[in-house]
Length: 287
Length: 287
Image 1: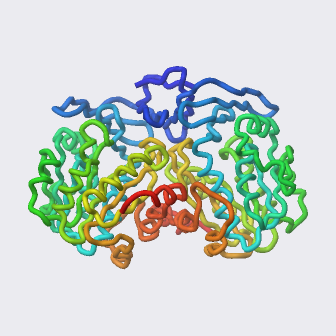
Image 2 (image 1 turned 30 degrees about the horizontal axis):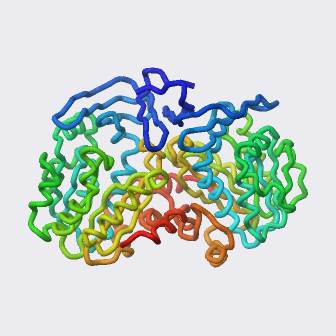
Image 3 (image 1 turned 45 degrees about the vertical axis):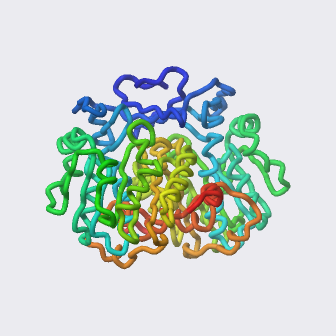
């Protein structure tokens, strides 16, 4: 069966696979200084944002990604007061972070303001906390910002980036992780999306090696579904500065005053369960 | 971007989505008395079997499905000696079942022998236990077989079927579950693939209602990735006769003498974690 022009198709070259959603017209297109940003209406997934032709976020399934990029790491930290989000221009991660009453300051640094403008227009629900007095949105180079920030300023860093190729590649480098390590306070945590465990094990291994090179004391990966990304199976990896991972503020999860669609205490524990092939591969990795 | 004829594409009508793998030629095609069975070589997923145009099994990712259809239910049963597999003609589930030394007899009943012949030719690794003296392969109507079988004959029933439409629909009916309930011994368990939690919640609800109507005492759903199926996020639901679910033979998992790629004790527990939206929906369901 072949797909006609009504379908919005992303080909994953490394996976030899493609994912498509039935479209109902383009709502937004702008070539920014950095990339091409598009938003489509789809038949069943609500709206879909593409950046340079790659699926980024859909109305229907973004809750999985945004909740899993924020709540596990925040509930794994004892007292997450100061949070930085690198990338994350659609503002969905920022919204989840600001649901945590302990957070006093959340700075989102995405180089491309066009992504946020497109999100404000077409994913207004993701932007509903942009006006929160604890939120600060900056449209500058997050890598430079991280190098310049005062040491120990942050409790949690969330790297909500594109794939590790092109402009996103440096966000997976030991140099960037070193800057993050310096920017984190004692016990600070970094989390970064770490691609699909089925087809990107080499990227995951490189991340573990880079986190160790940057002197992170521990690292663990969490796994979750993400239908619009290649294989539909995604991961995020947490690195810890001068502390071990494992425990989380479980009673705070049980009594949390905000709603989630995917995340809860059961899912928190479950997300860290390592598939057997991953557990075996990890034995040979550092951290 | 559009896909040329080299791509093998499955459109999921209810999901408004499509999944495609880059093909390298057709290896097998036969119109059986029941359905059209095809096998393709793909660029990155090994071989891919389609039945009536729907993706069924690939070399690369079938371990997820086959392990999760067999090991959680078998390790949840105290002493699984007698197992029946309804469907499962590719023999991958049978292979996993026969890894369990407690299993004395495993009967696979798939109506279509052509599926098994195609698997023997193009997925020989899935068929490697077909000659096990404990295995019996029958090519008859599994629904009729279940109606006729002696009451209490089975410890575990695995329904490894197609989607609940067309010929597969009756396998999701209260009548079929009643026949299964009768065929199970006390404490017996049934497991059935139960589609994608993201787009098939109505099917899951119907399954819970049908299991209750068939007098199953408890039911629980397990969740796992399955890249070649719509959304990449799949589930299976277990029903229990005159017993509660929850515990499993954890020490037997820890000391199991066979290899797995995905399943282990951590994954067993994790698979039963209920996403928040599912947990809330389930409150309104029986069982």
